Amino acid sequence: VQLVESGGGLVQAGGSLSLSCATSGRTFGSSAMGWFRQAPGKEREFVAAIHWSTTSTVYADSVKGRFTISRENAKNTMYLQMNSLKPEDTAVYYCALGRNMLEVRTTPSNWGQGTQVTVSS
Image (cartoon, helix red, strand yellow):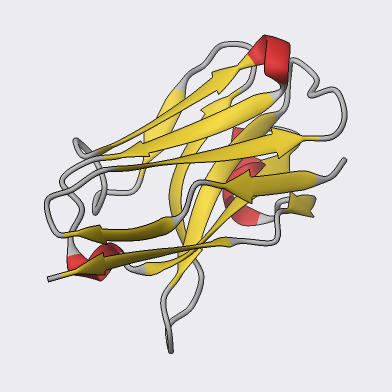
């Protein structure tokens, strides 16, 4: 399964961006997908995850209340709506696929190539 992100770009602080992650193959009901990010000089960190069939979600504390993860089953696509963006949200954002919510947060089986998000102050 290939994952392809899109939607990154440059935005001012307080603005919004929406990211998409399209999968090349079918995403099974028990699987989960997630978003991670990596800022320059920092380790990759978990942002949010969603269970494909139940749509239950989990967020990192740093984005809770500002970011919303969702998925569109018919299009095999996951989204990340980012509002009230801050300069510290600047990073390359990656989507990931796992067999379940635990695996997608710890040892995803598939990664996208990443998309740059830059938030100016």
